[in-house]
Length: 206
Image 1 (cartoon, rainbow, N blue to C red):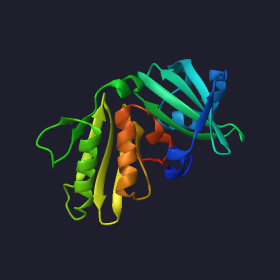
Image 2 (image 1 turned 180 degrees about the vertical axis):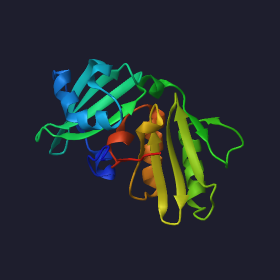
Image 3 (image 1 turned 45 degrees about the vertical axis):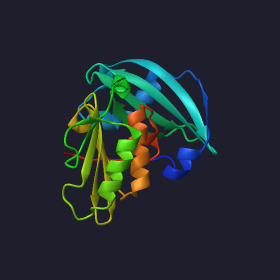
Image 4 (image 1 turned 135 degrees about the vertical axis):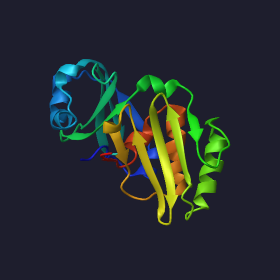
């Protein structure tokens, strides 16, 4: 099952985006994700309202994000649609309020859990990058029950994300370079959502 598969990561991070505000019916967006909701044991009746919907353009592509509140999950479900084809492009579940809470950075190379900041993130990930054979070469950044985590191996960095519950655990299938992981960690820490749609993610059953 594909999670989010939008643009090339490096290209998107520097591409200008133009945002417009449309009106989108909730039923239309929920129909797109019915197969995935069923697979995860969820029903459309558990979604109470459409809180926000917007379109954005990046290059020649146009996408729509619809933010739905799920009562059963007590979290937000984000549906991403290709505006040209009308097809589902991806989805995610996020604790939106948690994005505005301070992130904690956790790693065996830190003496304690620390409040994440840009300098510490870069120093820690650079340290992990120098230890491809160390089983403890991993880092977790957590906020409000959601977390993004990475581990270094001989081929590069593995990047994973979990939102709200283990049913929403995802992994980037390709190994990443340290600079790409830094961008994802900085984005998560700053409370924006570029980390979620600038990479290809796949659902991972735990």
